[in-house]
Every structure is written in C-alpha cells, then in structure tokens.
Length: 284
Image 1 (spheres, helix red, strand yellow):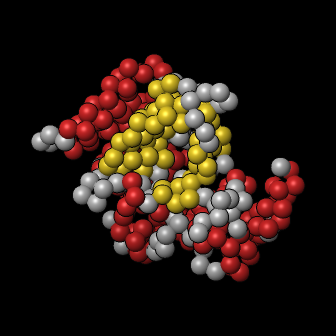
Image 2 (tube, rainbow, N blue to C red):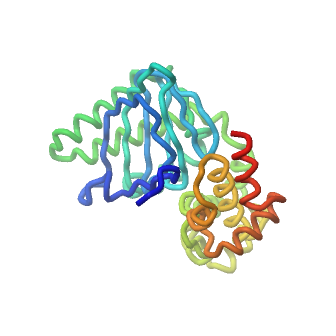
Image 3 (cartoon, rainbow, N blue to C red):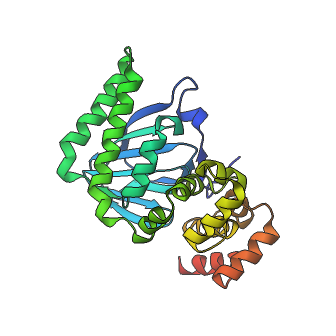
C-alpha cells in the first residue's frame, strides 16, 4: 500500500483507454491534489478560479486563462486558493498523439509551457477544449483527427505566446546541431528510464560514435554526464518538494544503486541526499 506522503504515479492504463490515445476530463478542484507524476502528457486549461501549481518544486500561480503542459518527466501538485474552486479542462494523451514534427517545433520555440498566460486568447482556447470534449463524447467518424487538430492549435498558441521567453542556450544548441536537439527532447522526457547512448543516437539519426562527439560539442559535456545531471536535478527537486524516502527517490530518478546515487549527489551539490532532506524538514 502506498504511503500517504509518497507521490503517486498515474498510469496510462488507468487514465487512457487501451484503444485510445487520449482522454479529456472536466474537473472541479476544491482541494489539494497531492504530489504525483504521470506516464502521459497532461494539458490543463483553467476556466475559472485561482490556485497554485507546483511543478518540479517550482510554484506557479493559476488564474482563468492559465494553460500548462506537463510531460512524463514532470511531477506536480495542484490546488485552489482558500475558499475557491478551480474549474479546468484536463486533456491527457499519449506520445503518439503528439507528432514528432510538432513536438520538435514546440520544445524548440516555446518558453515556459508549464505556466502560459493565455488570457488574451481565452475564448479561442476554451473553444478548442470544448470541441475536444464534444468530439470525445460523441466519437463520430474521424473524431481523433479533429481532436489532434485542436491539440496542435492549442500547442501552437502556447508556442507563439511564450516564444520570447525561450532560453537562449537551447536556441544556440539547436543552431549548432539540429539533430542533437531531437535527441535532447527524447532525453528530457525519458531521462528516468534506462536511456543508452545508442538509443539517443537513434533519435538523432546519427551513428553512436559521431553522436557522442557532436553531443559533447553542442552541450559542452558528455552524454552520460548530461543524463546524470538531469536525474540529479529531478531527485533534488523531489527531495525538497516531498517526504518521499531517499531510496525510492534514487530509483524514481533513474539511478540503479543507492550507493552510486548518494555519491554523485554529494559530488554535485556538496551535501548528501539525507542532509538536504533533514534541512528541508527543519525549515518546515
């Protein structure tokens, strides 16, 4: 039985029918949804109410028009402000509904897709979600294509609205070698899994040896170091944001052994995972 203080992992099997690639919910959130992560993408649009969304340890304010996309590499908790209720659309979907071309375009051009303020496009976004809802309810011929079209338009709205905030270093990385950017998208979404250099090279369409060379030239560090840094950052955020046991944080972050995790964590942050956890507990 899962301990109450452990983040829950929401599985695709539970939230998306095996014969489908998406499901849409209308939700009325009147209490805190505790820390969790999912095996799927989650796109949420706030129609009414005010609240807070904490993603990977970073807190974002929610208001009507807030729109955010979470990947399988994110964890979060969401809840309303006191005496309020959040009314939102929640579209959950698998990777195959998110075309490779759009995924690359979106993550290259969009800024903070975890906290997009879409108040200026509120009616357009709401209409798209309403269309997805209606198509999912009636499931007429071609409904999946209509849903995919609405999803793509929503994501492009986010990309347009947030492109100015795009981090400069990611633009530089793409300009240096666009094939490496394709691999980076895959790595950032699946770093908790056992990603090999060969698998990453395949995503880039390059031979492993050549990929290793251009990856280091593009990012400034070797592939394994880059992957380990992502896992360490995720682990530290999880330690700070939850009461999850260190051993389970180790494995949830993609490390294979606790000894290795504790050693590289201390090398990176100057403190052991348990020290960070104790300091966090003392501040609460």
